[in-house]
Image 1 (tube, rainbow, N blue to C red):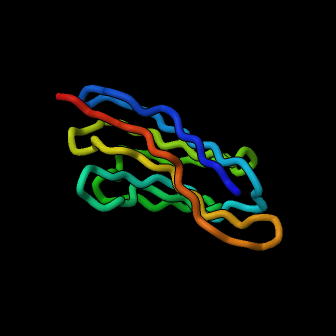
Image 2: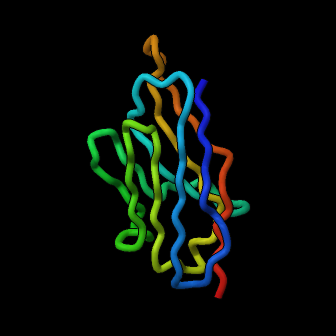
Image 3: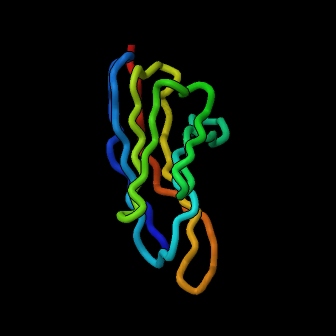
Length: 120
């Protein structure tokens, strides 16, 4: 089993910054992809940013130029630096990991979510 623990959410004014972190632990041989998704009530969970183990990045158009994702492969952590936050960024943010366990089984996992609220 793999557990994801997120930290860093909270309340911030529009234009401000927040930094989200996520640490993965458990039966991990390799994490293929780590990233962040977000969800508002009644809506689907949408991609924010992902990062495969080779260092490439993938961002939603709505956050390009404002958010930056980074990974520490040795520590199995992923961080999302969020700058110039907008009211529309308000959501529950979920950490995501596509994990290959020892023994070869591959599966994906979600963190419990952390609330980000941007106020005017």
